[in-house]
Length: 361
Ligand code: TXA
Ligand code: MG
Image (cartoon, rainbow, N blue to C red; front, side):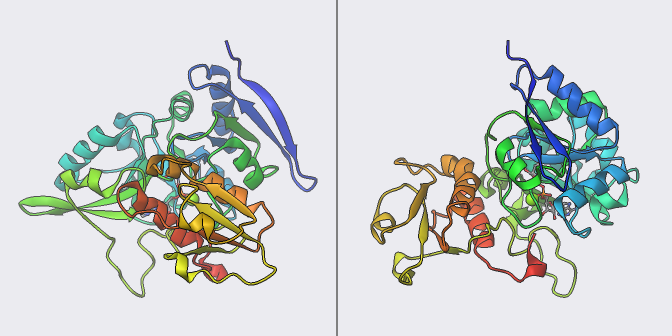
């Protein structure tokens, strides 16, 4: 039997200790109890989900949620996702209007527990800080057994954005969480690498008289457009110039490494400068991109086989590895924009935008 144990302490001279408790999905009692105790005391903890690691706080405790914003250096206008343990808990955080109740039921039956986040009218008990004052709340039931067990043990939903500093790459392992937040948070539960590797798909629902609803896709993710289409007409969020962004965290410059990343749509666009160090984020690790240049470093998303699911799982890890390789520029090769490829290209485009500082997440 594998016993949850403290495997490390990360100490930053300016900050506090971060405890790391390693656990197995099916033997997590001790880790779950520890994490729930930390959250119950009004503190925060990084927890595994099937998409990326989340930085969790009791969703009903505004002071604890404020600690999440502080640790991430996240601006207060960017609302959090709330995680529930069971579908029955949805009524504690959201009020589902009759006009979309059937669709909510269909979507949650099809995709929960799993990487689909629904934007719904919020319950009045949810503190303003969680939704950045919006009348809606983003909510999902994670498929990760440890995340769900912590919520059950706490007896309350948890607000949990990705466990990275604002504007940086989401963590898909506990070591990536430590690089982002070590010394800033008291606890990381390490349950190994995340199964999906990309953040959840975010959808809101607009009813239509006598027709299937419009499903507004606020963020592409593991639940693809093709998977959503049986339940409604999938459309982009309405562009509303002059108003706040509909999905405030979806600004250009999200998911950015510190090293400039250039997404090359065509190999012909690559004109290296002499003396500069270039790394390649390759899809399959072969083909014209690899032969194009004497790369200082190559990281491959799906070695040999070119599978989008594998590429999704490895994307943030490979971006992080290249970011740590002392390169001048990371060149990313495009992947085909079908299925999961849409979410991968979305993240690559955001990482490559080079947006001004006030647009970085
Ligand atoms: O997979 C995931 O969703 C991960 C794991 C930890 O669950 N979480 C995650 O959270 O990616 P975060 O905070 O990094 O991204 C949440 C996104 C942001 O872009 C935010 O703007 C959007 O959800 N969001 C939150 N509340 C919203 C709302 N009421 N309406 C529209 N967008 C909302
Ligand atoms: Mg995030």
